[in-house]
Image (cartoon, rainbow, N blue to C red; front, side, top):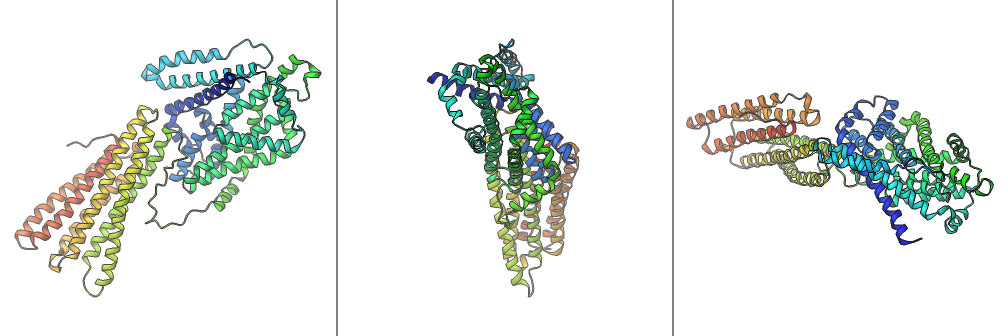
Length: 590
């Protein structure tokens, strides 16, 4: 085997893998947001869940993308784990379409074909490049270019395999003939080989293409090829489980259910292996018993040309049959994975890690934005909890007299330390989410997604400013608390501050309602009205403060600290409005 042929083989596989990736990303750019909504709306029961997973995977040509969307909905509480399992089952069926595309692309065998599918790839390149330069339709152009690369990779792979003449290569045929085709151990060996190859190249499509090449040239017997396909199903789940190791509990449970689904399917199919394969061969019209000696080379190669369709049909029948068996046991699968993977028991105050963004599981930039949105939502809710702590700190400072002072001082210091810890983590969250969005923005994204990322970067900056405001207010309260008794606020000042903080907390609640739902159903003017009310109340308290100082109701120093807290609340509300504007794309009138 010459070095040129080896590089043609590897290059054609690279074209195939890159074409699949380009197709998938283009389809996600065109339909990503809509598919998310479909995924959330069409999973009312296990059967619609399977159908939805299948249709979404067929639409985006990526079971990974479907799994990522599914896990994100589980994290957000929009889907239960049971619904997610049904969607993953459907994704396994949908991904078999890839095998059919490759079967058609590499069809031919020994018969003279009247149509060269590479002709379609050149049309795809030509039309695709025109549409790419027409910005309005460039995503369609990306899809056609990816399809062209996929088909060109398949035809190059087929031509390379033909030139290698592996069916008549003694070294290749002797290798496969060294395994007893009737032995159970042979099936296990090739099953493991398929799993290892898929794990190593990180692409079940590439291993499927190689399997089709070996079988269609007559080099590999059908039973060993089918065993490789079964191994591919296992290898792809190992990859997803390793990627989910750094993810949260829901992601790891979903990945484990995917692995259980495929492992169980391989387990039961081994008991009916021969009968199942023979049934699929009969359906396609492939003669299992035919040999070169009995039928001649031409008839044998023509028969071998059907093996691509046998492999694709087996892949589909295997996943459909497996889904039909396991769909009735989804609650039991859910209990099993929950029993195996238990949630980590951590103190909420110490668990300041990212919950939704992981380094390994996110492989589709368009859908990574959804994960970042969930992380920003959690960030915003944490900032509101931080503001609630500031309110509690103010309450403690107002009751720090009498015999309870020592206990209250300990509680005050403990609460202040928690606020300080929240401020530190708000800085870290801003940096980590910003770095993640920066990595996502390096990919080829749609204009809509690019605009979302710009808005999200502004959101996290404003949320970090909210954290800074809360910490500054806590420091102001602490300074007053540590001061002399005559420097404390009077009851009227405390009442005004609590009312101001209540309005600010109301603004934070409205902000979190927006971040946790769809902006189409959010009345942005409610937030603006609350901001106006806070501004008016600030002006009212400012005027009242000047009068109280002139009337010697309290000292100028106390009045300064008092107004610092009032102004801090008003400034925090401004940051809230900035977050709302960034999410909705609107701007408040001056």
